[in-house]
Image (cartoon, rainbow, N blue to C red):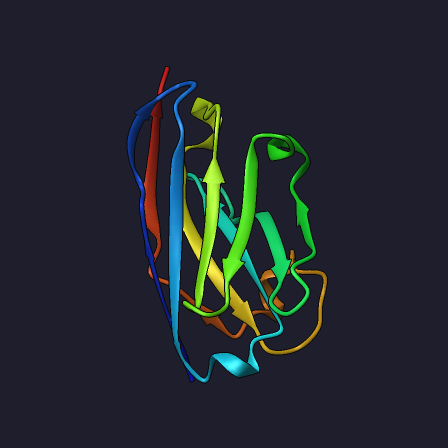
Length: 124
């Protein structure tokens, strides 16, 4: 079992930055890759970014490329999402997720563990 706890959300203005963190505990050695997803009110949960736990390669949703950076610190079992130049459309509940099997990193169904989410609100 793996437990995930997100933090770092908040209320910011458009153009501001936030850094989200996700601390993993338990059998973290079984994690293959981790991702950030977000869900706005009335919308489906969507992929934001993914990273392979061991080699660190990453991939992003097109609309956040160049503004968001996903990273991890394996020694601290922590996943990060640095979000710069935030836009109102970036608002939502952000979830981190961990998968034990290889995958694209963007398919919700491939993830075994989810955090409780952290709210990001961006005012215009």
